[in-house]
Length: 364
Ligand SMILES: *Cc1c(COP(=O)(O)O)cnc(C)c1O
View 1 (tube, rainbow, N blue to C red):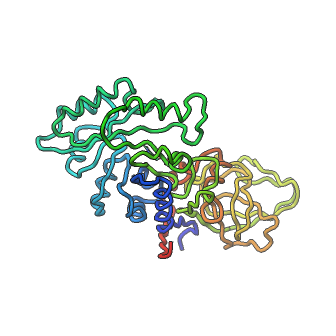
View 2: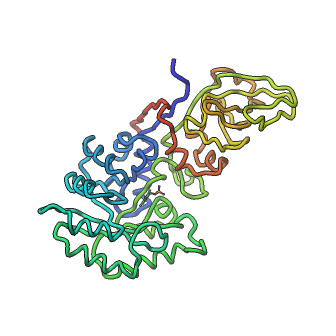
View 3: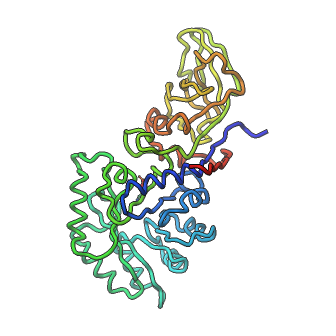
């Protein structure tokens, strides 16, 4: 008998959320972002759920090859481009499109592209985030240099937004980043891609030619508003069961470090899920959880394989009662928020030992 901990991945939810992203984006095409093993949902499941996407975008060249092996024939975009010459040759061979974000990559294209190669590149601008890309002032020069390379076929224009979820951030307002991009790329031909999920949901006017949707496709939101407000469905539901019950007297302490002490007599449940499963160890007492469909909260420190929950007011809860850690009925963003992190991190951290069940409803 396996542990009762199961992550259910709903392919129809992925498909539904992609349709939401597309609707939001107006006429723009959609890159479905499947980096980090489709945000923890599994690359093949992502590919299945996003079969209608215009392309799949990711970071990892080896996973990109895997997409081709799984039969994905539509565009694949490497969001950080190639890391060395071997990657570049793999990209040519599999017809991956590549982001070019630094001088070193241009130099490699100039010297290492095989004769007859035809590569579509996406020239990345650093429009203010100061992570990857060419600053606006040197963007045209980088573009001209790329144009002189025989093996470079198309050149698309791409940038990444730091504050699409917080447009009035005084350090870098969204409007300034959009202006930086528009001015730095002025008069250049080529398809443009600016928007991540936050921009797609909150600033559809920034959609340009291609949006790059990630977190929203998995049913999380990049902002403080609830996923349901945007008609997004959770694609991952992490479920377990109560495997033990304790009756505490007032003053009894729970778990490592005795971080929770019962203020009065109470019943608590032990859930088969811990930080070795990807549940955040730093989730404090009070992090929400569902038992028998009733909302309650964690108590004390999260252990490696278990966590404890309050069963006060859930009189029928017993060993075997179903528990939802996040997903259907309990948005992952709420759990992440209580734990001081974001839904992205929880999804991506789902551990390999968690059994995965894939479901697909035809009507979604
Ligand atoms: C991850 C990523 C995205 C998707 O971001 P979300 O916030 O998950 O929508 C878009 N563009 C780039 C370059 C990325 O790395």
